[in-house]
Image 1 (cartoon, helix red, strand yellow):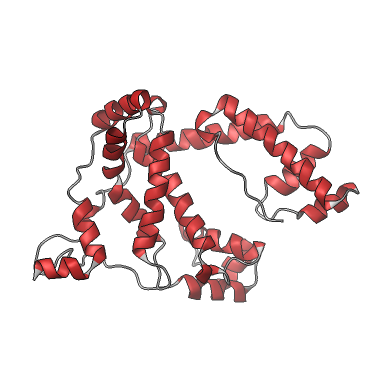
Image 2 (cartoon, helix red, strand yellow):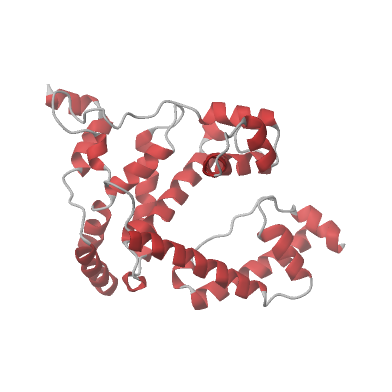
Amino acid sequence: METRALVNDPIKRYLAEIRRYPILTREEEYALAVEFLETNSEDLALKLVTSNLRLVVKIALEYQSTWTSLLDLIQEGNVGLMQAVKKFDPSKNIRLSSYAQWWIRAYILKYLMDNYKLVKIGTTQAQRKLFYNLKKEKDRIEREGFRPTTKLLASRLNVREQDVTEMEARLAGREASLDAPLVDDQRGSLVDLLPSGGPDVDDVIAQRQLSKDIRNKLREFASTLEGRDVEIWQKRLMVDSPMTLQEIGDLFGVSRERARQLEARILKKLKKFLNDQVDELSDLDFPLSN
């Protein structure tokens, strides 16, 4: 019966499979990461990846809904995890799980935004902003001691109440039960796969420091800009609701294509700046809407 349950349920089969891989200690992870950096060994990369497969499941569950496949989300998250292993620098004194979560989330979010079932959700800048920020704003309001009503959310996010209602309806869906057994008639549930407790204090501090360093680097870069590059940076590249290329062109009395060239020049400078000072950010893209 247990075998039949595994065969018939690919989720349970996958969860049972990844449960076999142990989670590495900080010391084990560091030693493997250092050796992988020197040898680029596929076997070492595999060990680093498999030890963090449960983290991908945990993050994928945050984005699951009735119109998404958990396995698809996990698959995209695993691609992000592999990219993180490839870019990971153990000398930064950050656990791989802390570094990898950003890559995992990025790949899952990209999949969701590219998925044809989400075309109706992400067709405008306002909808894309709402898609990414609704849950975050809800959490922020609750931390402030208020109830996140539709009216308050709409005011905070500068959208219509109808937009908030529609987005909540689309994002609402069944959640996988963490207490559901992995295999019928056998002990062990999904919650057993997830890391217990919150992140280590040193991981939290490292993440905050990394975020602070990135913000500082962006401020340093902004201080090198002059003339209209400053306005493009402030009004196009560093705001939640950026001006369109056409609006930038109208502002400076140039064509939309010329505005695109000006923006591309700034991004090229930024990439070089980050490449010189923050190695792990040098391969990031900066996608923008038209």
